[in-house]
Image: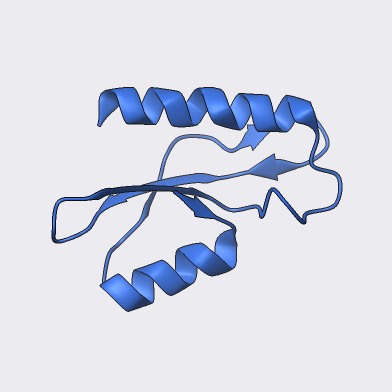
Length: 78
């Protein structure tokens, strides 16, 4: 699980993996975060989101909950 756009970019470079945007951004009406999914050459599934949830200003519990639901759906489908 990758937390934040910078981590997404670093993972793609370090592991030569392409992370694909998954559906529409998740939003709480004020801020939004995009979800990404990919598979490493070893077969390990990678899921990430574009916002750093620990340090981003304005991240609400509503947005965290919606992200949690979408990630759970991606994990179930993987």
